[in-house]
Image (cartoon, rainbow, N blue to C red):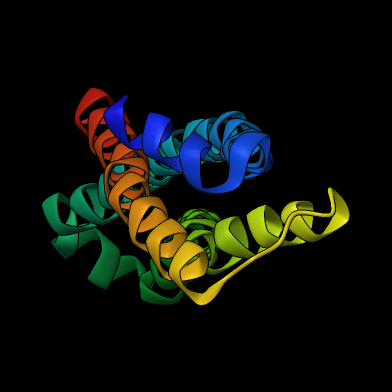
Length: 159
């Protein structure tokens, strides 16, 4: 909280615009994390279904070979694998969106803060800009760590 006080002394209430951006980012990221967790869960279900088909085929390998059903088993496995890959792709794309949001935060948060300063008619000196950037960077690291903790928690819950 000490950093927020220093930010206030540098740019007055303009720092709130950056924090509001973060406050908007957080629930959006939390929702994306829930979707990632759902995709991982569905991926696990799809993987179980595919492995069940392959396990049954391996157990009954002699019958499968005698009846010439290799192509049927292969197509069933491919169908299950396509569903599994779809869920994996969906989870990875959502993860990429999540990472992108937090990767652009160190750029957007200061930009929004300085744009607000300019709109409020506040004079910005080099010292104010560099001090504000340093203070915002102190805040950004813990804020960027939070989504990783959230994703780790969701992955642990799914496992």
